[in-house]
Image (tube, rainbow, N blue to C red):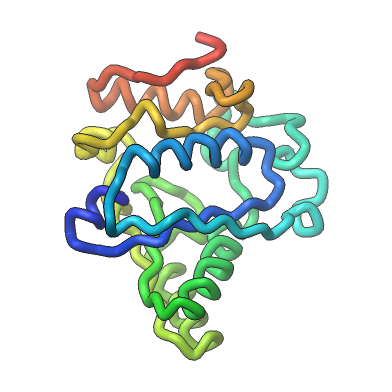
Length: 201
């Protein structure tokens, strides 16, 4: 998604929200490496925000690391309540402060959650615009793509630096969680060699 937006001439401010989720240290480390590899004058330094989720989520598996959904669990098992509401609210405040009007989300086709729908994005954009007295438009450039399709169109993107694991071992993908299973399936469907190092095969 970032590469596509850069190719279209967009200037990008990457934002990461730390909430206390168990995989964030690994995810953030990989994100920093990935952004460094992208190297573009139109890509601003990463802005890291902190918004603790413990008070909202309570003893949720994403915060405790206990009961992490395994490879055979359905997508519904990895739902994080109001995740996009939280992400968009925080990002919109930063955008209003910096006079940025467009927020891009990496939502893919098949995402079953209400806060990933087109209707939600439009409504949320209107609400944030009104709340902040600043125009906010929310886009999802990959919303028509499956994960496999997104991989096939990612020529030149350092896929070996991407990350999608719910229970990382250090910086490595665990190989057993629901997201690792989804990642493996996507690479197979895309017919692209999977460069990921999994702890468990």
